[in-house]
Length: 503
Ligand code: NAD
Image 1 (spheres, rainbow, N blue to C red):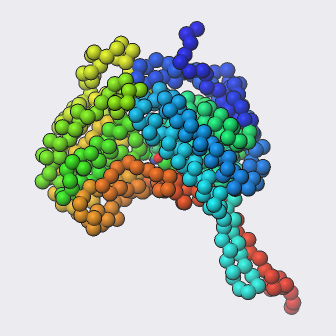
Image 2 (image 1 turned 45 degrees about the vertical axis):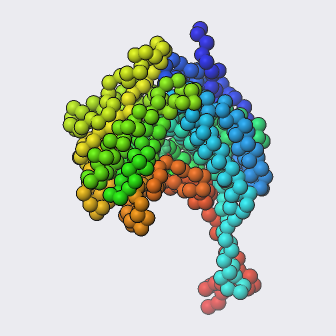
Image 3 (image 1 turned 120 degrees about the vertical axis):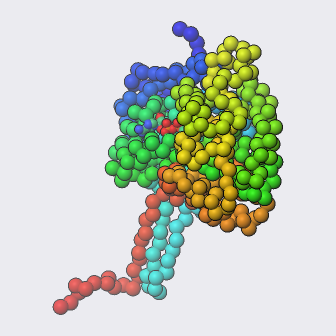
């Protein structure tokens, strides 16, 4: 049997790795070469039941552990994550195909930041309720109580970050979690579980199951589960939300987008191009908040395209561990085929003008080593003079494909930017800050930026509008998604109000 670069990834519950009873496994693939990375155990229904039982057993004690003590344990986990940053980032690079220059600076760091944020929040009284004096002899108080056993289901683009954005507030609030990574990028899952255990998270509080949509669907419908937090496509999210609704489970849905990046007529062109490139080519275009509809005022379109073409040469594919590389392959073969088919559709059916790139093999691959030739590499691509009706403009491609859409007036661009069923992110580039706020106020999106793109710090709540999602992650509001309210009214007058005391 050929040995694989990484040891098998098992399931994880009761505080330790567990072999799947299913006896089944699958392999995850290195996107830069298309070679297998590890054997991944596939959870059966009985395996999922065992993980849920482990979490159910751990819940009473963890939820009753003082918040300050939970906080201390989670802060320790955050510090272990930071200590192991480069090792974990290298694993993420292998699994996702994202350059190490990115994963080492963003993926683990932004996950650890959120863990630290929620640990500090609950340690500092963030789970306190309210007291309401109703009259001198009566008052009410509210408590924020943990929900129980919660499920986190992740996408493949920011695996460990997504795992932490879900598990951090979940555990901080006193819940237990069953986490399922995307079947395309499962390597981080048990490493994170081991880090939680090493930090002192008790057995059963954070658990991992492996598998694809069938395992996710079983988890979502499980009667022992109180909440599902999901990150993925709109179409999958709709199924997950419907299934969860049947069991009256709480949900958070972080779904896809087709966000508008609006370059207002007075914008600094260099800055607008920098922003638009970050909004389309970072992580090889595999970012949910990407601003793939780039609206450029007609007066500046020629100059914008000139500067963009100059800067496209700064996109550097290559050895993913080289600090100079800033562009990797797409995550998987099916995704590669999907993105290429959109590029072809843009040319053949939408008849958009191809300004750069396209569906051909990247030229640099011709002289690359033979292993890399089989990776899922595509060219960063720009279409211009696009129309709102084109499929490449309407649908989320989730690859490095920018569509430039010229416009004439600010009123027109606002209307066109909002003319979509999605509403994840939006942003404007301008020197006129009054105009910036006026336009932002009219854009229908949950995450918006002015003169920048993509930063999503722990302190800022993020979530989509319309079909892009339900609820938010991060920030003060983020904790509310992991607690339920209990209100208690206390009567101290010595008399029970009743209409039945006398005739
Ligand atoms: P996906 O919907 O194909 O899969 C996401 C997860 O759902 C995977 O773990 C998968 O195994 C699981 N799954 C599949 N079918 C299921 C079912 N019936 N029940 C339960 N679970 C099921 O998404 P993807 O291709 O992995 O991720 C890309 C998408 O994620 C893009 O649309 C992107 O915009 C979105 N995304 C959104 C955010 C955000 O914060 N809004 C962040 C990252 C990615």
